[in-house]
Image 1: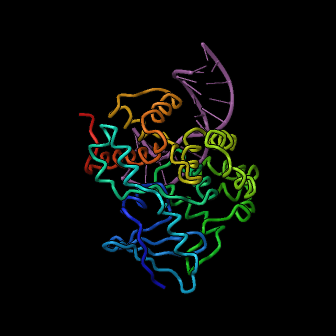
Image 2 (image 1 turned 30 degrees about the horizontal axis):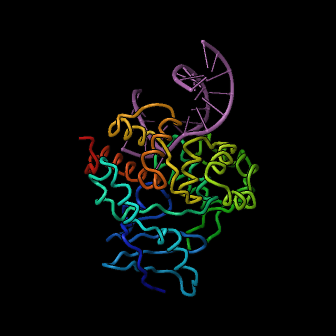
Length: 283
DNA sequence: GCCCAGGAGTGTG
DNA sequence: CACACTCATGGG
């Protein structure tokens, strides 16, 4: 079943390939596919519309995609606001279609706990391993990210044999410490309280709490600081210091859309490191 | 082999 | 508050 929808501006390569989320795969010609909720979705960016292909009878696919790509974000307006920053204004037009995604809260939490001190290819593998073991099959050979219930059935030694390293213990205790009800309750907290609640969880520190706030709970003011962002802040803004200091700087500088600013800086820093084009400069 | 990775937890000064 | 150290392991 195919249908078209308008989500603009949108660059799927930038949005789905930059490490916000880990289960989308790029096919030829800019087509992306992957599991979204309990459905397997293929997305093909056309001139002015996004062509979506899902299994016949999938009624909620349109809503799922719109929600995941945050279709209601007024990205043009957000970029206009962030362009007041002289550093970002230089290259922001080249990430016009890079959108923040909205992930499932539980999937996001586990994913970014796994992401600690690992690189993206490995994170992808770990998440694929958990999904293939504990996820529900949605189409042939593709399994959804495991629910809290199914992942909770994994024993500690079982998890320890899956190549997660020390993260295996985090995942196991995470299952014991939180459930769907608790997550549902957290969606109603203000961002500061949410952050503190997340940090009470095993394997969740400043950075993971901010990633989960941003990509999982949709708090656009969150500004996760990893090694790449640290480098970007040093190089472009000559800012160094503790997490709290850098976070305060970002909050003051980028305000309610700090999350988008973070993603632009992150994308740019990684492109730069891999020899790609550099969007922003401090000159 | 070597260095690094979308860090967190714990202990110490 | 700031550091220092450890944690387990794959990717480039």
